[in-house]
Amino acid sequence: MSAAKSQIPLINDRQDSTVAISNMTPRNIQSRINALDWPRILASLHESGWARTGEVLTAQECDGLRALYSNDNLFRSRVVMARHRFGLGEYKYFAYPLPRLVADLRKSLYAQLAAVANDWESKLGGKSHYPETHQEFIKLCHTGGQTRPTPLMLRYESGGYNCLHQDLYGAVYFPLQTVFMLDRPELDFIGGEFVLVEQRPRAQSAAHVISPRQGEAVIFTTRWRPVQGSRGHYRVNIRHGVSTVTRGIRHTLGIVYHDAE
Ligand SMILES: [Fe+2]
Image: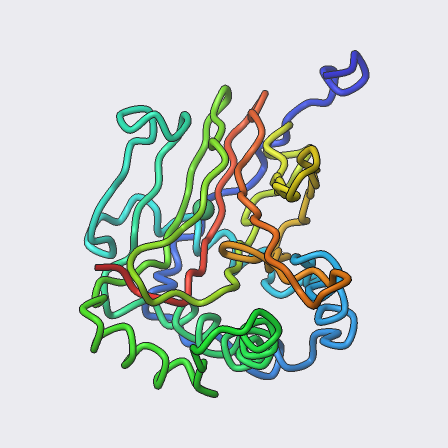
C-alpha cells in the first residue's frame, strides 16, 4: 500500500439500515437489469470472460443487504474460511425463500445471460442447453439432486482474503456468476480487489484485478471461457478470489445460478 493510501481515513458515517430488506419489495429490479448496457457487457464477456455492470443497486439497498448478514434466520449455513484453508473471512449461504431482492437479481440476470451460456456451450461442443428462464434451470438442478440455495453473502475484515477457487456444487452448473459490491472501496475498506486468474494452456497464467464500485456487479465465468484458436474454440480455465483487505470491512453479495447438492 502506498503512503498516500495509508493516510486515507476510513469513513464510518453510515448506520446500518434497519429496513428489513428481506421483506422489502425492491423496485424495478428487472427493468434496471434490462436497462444495463448489455451490448458492452456481452462484448466484454465474449472478449474476456468477465464484465462490470455499472451501478445496479442503490446505496440504501447495499446498506439493507449488508444489514442482513447478522440475521441468521435468513441463512442455511455459515462457512469460516480459515477452517477449510479457503482464506480468511466468512460467508453465509441464504436459505430458501431468498430475500426478494436477491431472488429478483438472480432471475433477471439469468434471463440476460442464458444466451451467452448457450453460445459458449455450442462453441465448445457441449451438449447442455440452458433454458430461457431461471425457474426452468433450477428445475434441472433439483432433478439432478442439487436443491440447496447458493446465493451468499461474504464478509472480510482487515487481513481477510479469499484464495483462488471455482464455485461448483455438483454436475449441473451455470457457466457465469455474479458478485455485487456492497461497500465503498477506499472509504469503507482498502485492498480487497476482486481477482481473476486465467490458466492459459501452455503459457503462464494471467491475472485481472477488478475494483467494482458500491452497487456495481462483476459478471464472470464460473469455470472457463471459450477462446478462438486456429482449430476452433478451446477452454481457458479461470479461477477467482479476493486480494487482502488491508483496512476496514468488505461485504459482497454472490449470485450463483445453480443450486448445490
Ligand atoms: Fe467464489
